[in-house]
Length: 329
Image 1 (tube, rainbow, N blue to C red):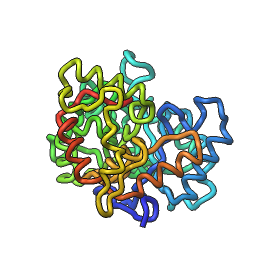
Image 2 (tube, rainbow, N blue to C red):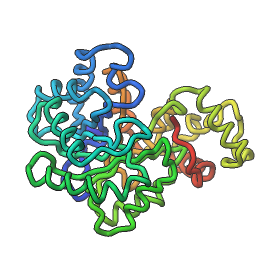
Image 3 (cartoon, rainbow, N blue to C red):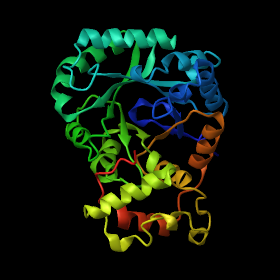
Image 4 (cartoon, one colour):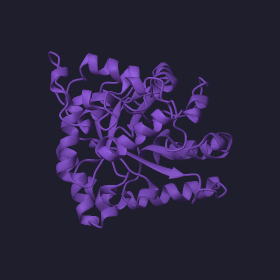
C-alpha cells in the first residue's frame, strides 16, 4: 500500500483521501511562477492523478484553478477531492470583502474549475483579527452555498507565515460547535507545535486536516536551513548545545547509521520532511507543491515510505519540540 493507493478518512467529511495531496500554490504554482505555462501546469496535475493522488488543493489567488479544471476533466468528477480557497481581502491591509463579494469569488472559482461543486471551500489564511467577521458574515454565506449544492464542506486555512503558533485556529477549536469540517494547518519538523495546540483537538472534533508547509525552503535549500537554525539559536529558541554542527544542523536526520528495522534513514531532508508529516497522528493528507511531474513522483514516494526511525524522531522532539516561531519558508 502507498500514500496514493492507501486512503484515509478526512475527518467527519467521510471523504477518502490519498495521503499525498497536490498543492497548487507555494513557490512554484505548478510552474506558472517559473513561466512554464498553462499546458505544463495541466500536465503536472494529470501526472499526480496518474500516480493515484485524488486530493487537489488550489486557490483563487494562486492562478492555477483553470489548469486544475482542465486536468480533472480527464477523470470522473467523483474520483477527485477538489479543494480551493477564497481570501477575505484583496490585498494585505485592505478591509475584508463583503459576503456578496466572497460568494461572487466562489462562483468565479466554480467557473474556472469547470465544475458545479467544490468539495472543500476554505477561507484563505484566516487571521485571528478576522475570526469575528468571518463567523458573523462569511460562514453564513458559506452555509448558503452548501445548501445550494455549490460546496460540500466548510474549511479554513491558517495564515501560517504570520501565525506560526496557531493562535487563530486554537481559538476556533475552543468551541465544540465551530463550523469548519476541514482545516489546513502548518506543520513540519522545524515547527511541530500544532501537534499539541491543534491536532489533539481536531481529532476530538472530527475535523479533517490538510498539512501544508511540510517542506519549504529550509528543508530544500541548505543555506536557508543554516540561516534559520542560526537565527533561532541566536534568539535562544533552539539550544546551541543540541546542534552538533551549525553548518549542517540536521546531519543526524539523514545519517544511514540511524536506520532501524522497517524504518530506513531518509536520503534527503525533503524526504524526511514528508515522512515526518505523513505519519503524524491527526494529519490526514500531506500537500506537496511542485512545478515538475518528476518532482511530484519523488514527493509521493517519500510520503509513501515508513515513519522516520524512532531515535531520529526523539532527537527532533528534543531540539524542536517547543519551537513555534519557524515556518520553514
